[in-house]
Structure formats: structure tokens, C-alpha cells
Amino acid sequence: LMPFCVMFPFYEVKYFNIQNKVIRFICTLGPITAFFRVSEAMFGFMPAHTVDSVSNTMIYIAVPVEVKFNNMGPMKSSWGDAKGNLIKFGAFMLLLGAYSSFLSDYSYEPFPTGSGSNLEDINLGNGFSRGQLINNALAAILFQLYLTTFGYGITTLTSLGGVQQLPMMLNPIFESKSPSDFWGRKWNLVVHGLLKRGVYKPVRTRFSRMTASTATFIASGIFHEWILAVLFSPEYNELEGDACIPPSCYRPGFGRSTLFFIWNAIIIAMEYLIGGAAIFQLAKRHLPSVIVSILVSSLGLPMGHWFMNDYVRSDYFEDGQLGFPLVVRVPG
Image (tube, rainbow, N blue to C red):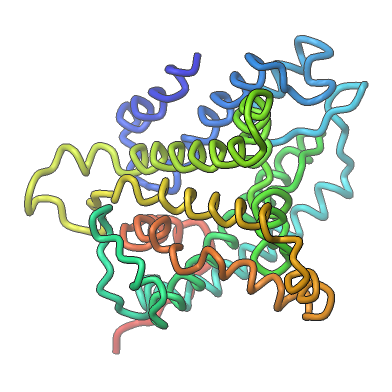
């Protein structure tokens, strides 16, 4: 089943000739959740009550979100849940449209940096330039808005279908108290659950917490590389030389996403080692919470373009603009 999950999206986008990269991204969601849920089943780490019945197990594996279960099966949603989620979805659609209206005027990269998009172009010094830091911060907020909006859209559909699911995002950039809080309790909780049960817990049964954490971040990097391969297939490997003209045809910088997640694994390891030091605890207690969150988010900011450049410099976000209201400047 795992090899099928890996290969299916490539055949799907080719057979249906799917060109929109956001729709291609959506095509990866089912296979990637199924892949890690198979791992959960193999190692015995499926959540409570998902194995109480065949129907519970089938729902859990088939639905690419984190459905809530209790001893009665999938937890039921109410009309109030659906209404609340729909209102939040609409609000974030408008917010995403307004934010994208601003960034799209600069092709999602307001400041020219000269940094390349290939693996060999990585330069640690580039990430600390003012322009690159601002670009990375703006792109990180854009990613958060996309995932939050998409999450509320999916939650609205599942609640209308009568079941509850866990939220996808909990405002990680502006509400995280530590790196582990950012990645473990705020950012993309669906993927966090998959990686925790499908990678972290199996590795943790035999190795240290730090080793399991590092393995989880590496696995995250590898599956994000796989997503890039789906998004930019077949253009990047079928067109040669000058025939591939960005942004519609784009060759991703494979390896950069994995390095970005390895960098964050190092940050988590440092938190394990020195996070309890008095200076960090003092900052947590006395600095405004939003300042603490921004400082936490800034730890990965200089390397953010290692992960985000492939999305920013291709037409990924241009394809996404078709899904929400946008204000576009008309040439005079």
C-alpha cells in the first residue's frame, strides 16, 4: 500500500492533465495521510477508538484529516459547529485575499535578494540580509494563511458531514511559546499527528527522544520533497534547456526542504539541551507573549527560503489566486 500511496499522485495528475499546482497539492493529501497511517497501523500507534471497529478504522485511514473519535465512534458535530467554521472560513478567505493582493503586486517577493533556488545555491549568509528576512517573514505568514484557510474549509465540510475534526493551525507564528510548541502544538496539527504516530513513536521505542525527533524532521523533509516532485511533474524533467521558462515551468531545488527541516531539528535539540536555562525562562515570564512568539518564529526565519522559494518563485501562488477574492492593480 505504501508504494501505491507514493506513486498514485503522479499518475493522477498526468491522467487528468492537472495543471493547477494548488490542485496538485490537494491530490497529495490523501496518499500522504494514508502512507503514514499505514505506518501507525504497522507499529501499533493508531489513536484510541480508531480500531474499535472496522468502520472506525476505514474512516480514519480514508479521510485525510484528523477526525475525533470516542467510544461511540466518530464524534458528532452540530449545526453550530458548522456555522462557526463557515464564518471563520469566510473571514480567512477575505484576509488571505487582501494579503495576497498586496504580495502578488511584488510577485510574492518584495525585495530582490540574488539568492538562487538550487541546492548548491545555499549560502548561510544570505538568510540574514534584511531583504531576505523580510521576504521570508512575509512568505511564512502567507503559508500560515493558506493552511489556516484551507483547514477551516475542510473543517466546514466535515462538520457539515456530521463529524468533528481537530483544527489544522493554531496561529503558530504569533502564539507559540517555544520551538516545540510551534511544531508540536500549533503548526499543521494534522501532519504533526501523522509524523508523531507514524515516525516519532516507532523510532522512540528503540532510540532516544532527540534521535526520534531528528528522524521525524528528516521524514518531514523527505515527504515535502515528494510533494515538490508531484507539483512540478512532468515539466521539470520533460522539458530541456531554454524550453522551461519560469514560473509556469519550474525546476525545484530538491534537497533544500530537507535541509530546512534538519535546521529545525537542530533548534529543537538545542531547546532540549538549554531551553530550561534561566535566561529563557525569564524571557518567557516577562516579555509580552507576542514578542516571545515572534522570537520563536525567527529562529527558523533565516533559512525559510530554503523551503519557500520553490513555491514563491513558481506559479504556485498565482494558481492559488483563482480560489479567493483578489484586488489586482490595472496597468495605467
